[in-house]
Image: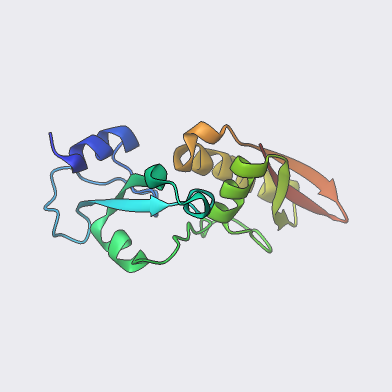
Length: 149
């Protein structure tokens, strides 16, 4: 079994960057084909730990587009969120320090519930070991989406 197959099986054949399915049978040179992305988190990089690199499954195009810069996981276009926090940086901070973080504001309870549901699902695949959960809190005429360790 190849390294791509090992990582793909572990990741459930979903791209960690765009969260779309990856076809295991597609040619690795195809933009939608599978590739292994070596990810180093800031916290682990700061420790200069040799085991800091984590291998994640990504589409070839997603991996190439990201390059050697820090990855950005976008919020879904269908969500109505204001001032969305960067997902990866927030998850890394909560994994390291615990606590809670306000990750977005929404104008209605329905919008906030939709954003919280989407975020909980996305974070559960992005960092399953973190055990993060979402909450919605009313405040100041808006609804806050909170991510809690």
